[in-house]
Length: 379
Figure (tube, rainbow, N blue to C red):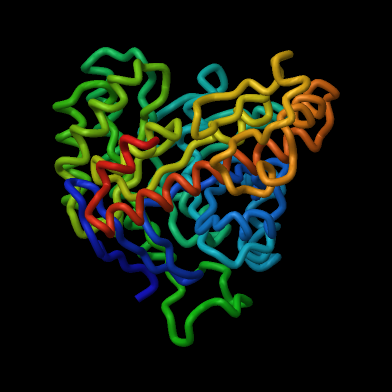
């Protein structure tokens, strides 16, 4: 099988498991760093490997615009192109198109939009989005969906949900017809005789209405996807509402398939989502915050730009074993940031990613020991 998932241990609702892809195994719950253009900003792939990144998220919309899907395909697929031998997940581009609110038009067929780069006209349908994802060749691909804006009235939300469900069926049908076109022919990491197919995840929508979230989850599960994502969150709603909508959907997702909450959250939040039984999470927060001097530590958030750190000889986080905390002082990190040195962004990002990944490692370990509650209280 090219994709499989197994729960290996539970602690309350939290689960520790693993899924298998053609490019390797991933232990869950897992945090996936966002490498929008095939790059986690400022961090080379060998450093990501050293940090223990198991799976990367790449963005279909951005790679479609540049360097172009056909270029990536001809170069052997996204794994070979970015020199990453471990699993990759690509989103469908639906959220990015959603964010172009002034540059897009949605119809039953798909979404016409203008590039944020040069204003050129483009069109994504469920079929063309999957065509792009097939051309890129990621291990896990997402069905094309419409991300409902916030706030949105109930009828508007229902219409959006129904459209996403119809698009999910079309995405599923297209991948089944074209699954053997994935450009993995040059990869030595594939197991001998393995099927060169991708795992297509369906996406639950439903806006900020719990009953619509439950209906969307139920009907998406009926389509029998290898995994399920909960999308349309973190679009401006209160955090409590984000949590409520995720919880409403998770209750109806099957226990034998991976559950993915898209676009969340802080170190504390990813632990709380793991407690709900979420297996996969991604967020730009650790990398984006790092570029703005906001660092996450075991003792809370640190804004390294503050004057109070100018003569601080201590490590950023005395409880962190990452190479940044082992080597550099807070004073030096502040100096780099205030001097606008590129190295500041690199070191800050390495630390933040390390903390997120360590948080998930501790969560997995605690779940396997049947003692996840103590991990939650320690974060």
